[in-house]
Image 1 (cartoon, one colour):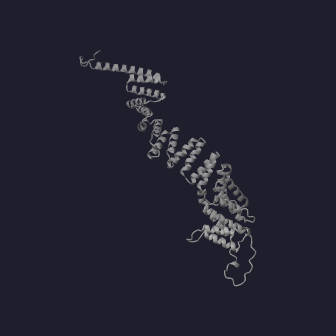
Image 2 (cartoon, rainbow, N blue to C red):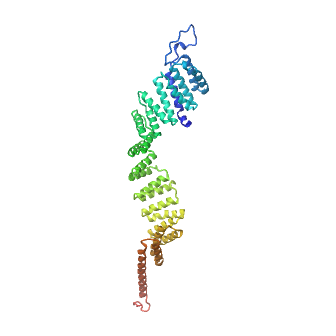
Image 3 (tube, rainbow, N blue to C red):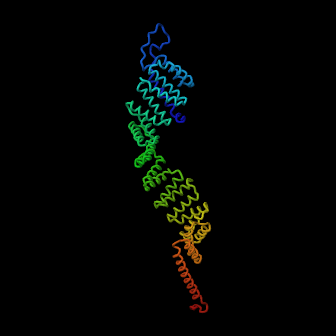
Length: 459
């Protein structure tokens, strides 16, 4: 409570004191001279909107104690004593004097952070029968503001509605406070029109609408699922303020309406302006680009995030980077992140990826070694079956047919549906290889017969 009040205390003090400036009449001419050369004339009849000499002097002393000039110290205790003495004669005061006294009581209570007493005093002011309209309006305004600050929003709304009924003109401040009070009660449909009225009044007077007002409006549009209006508001905010959060929020709104193309476009624009600040934001954009068949753009963003130190080079992120390279079919470039992934995580999956990448890059010996290491470390059953099949493929390229056939048979036993046909392929390839090898050997023997010295010889 006190933290809230600290922001407004000085404002309420000025409000009450400026009210006094309007309410206190100049000291009557008959009371201005201390010297008296003769019998005084009887004072004029007291009006209900003027201060007597006695009340005026007390209030002047109180004002000086509470707001001294120069280096003099504030004397709140002294001011309270003076007010209490005057309050003892409360019933003899006219209505204007009562309201003046009570206004200075509110000044005192606000200065000492006694918010409840200040509220009770403002409420007491409103009970004065002949209270001037301007004084009633000031009291209602202050009452509503304090209620709002104390999170007593229903009472704040009641005070502001009374203010509107009494006032001949509307107030941008009242519209804002009504909007804020209804917002805190989650009456968003009621709050939105008040906030729009507040903004319209400021614009009519060529006054700036602050960014936090637009932000509040946007939050309420989101809460009421008015996403098109939220989008329009955020686009206006981007034009006016160009804040990183507004770009990211606009992307989120496009996500709410399943417009992924626009969401990714806004995020990518935000990235190029340097507005992505967290690992999650970089990862979101990179993976979104990969999901819309632009994995190489996602790779560049993810690598940039790692280079800036925003995205950590841990096992999870290196796995995602490796996967994006694989999706882009950039296998040679995928080798480095795959090696880093294997080094950081020391997981079987990392070596499985490394084996596949090496196979697709034509590095069959490295592929066979990596896949075998993955199998030795232990893969789940589905991954194990695929790994054995790729091990078989790598071994075939290395002309290690017996080992390849054994790996393919294991893949088949583990349920890989392609393994059976690949076993046949291995057998046929091995037969062709053996036939070719035999013919090669025969050809060598045929052309290297030493007895005939240049003539062919037969086996």
